[in-house]
Length: 143
Figure 1 (cartoon, one colour):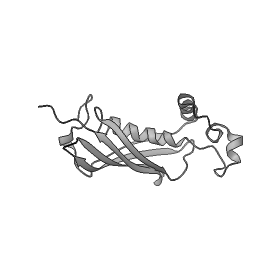
Figure 2 (tube, rainbow, N blue to C red):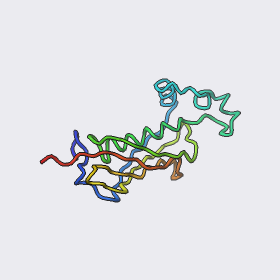
Figure 3 (cartoon, rainbow, N blue to C red):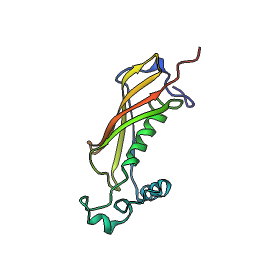
């Protein structure tokens, strides 16, 4: 793995794991809402959110998915890999000020198709807030 290219298919092994952690700020939520257009008041309006089952604002679920993308695109498999599929279930809310730890663990390697399946999990204080699987297409080492 180098700065311009992550792991090659031949470098990967089942069980390899990498992670990325981010503490979510007010600015992150506002910017994410602006970038995506998702201005659901449960994310951006404290008075509204207090009346919901969450009793406070919650971070967009797809923000956690973005942290998974950070792991896959920068750490494992890393630069050069193509993120082609994701199944994801949201298990618990994330709040402003929470530190989300996203991890990816190699589950399967299909050398013929150059596909790598990874378990993807986001946790806050050890509690799973999102989990699923992702598939990446990974380059073979140049000859």
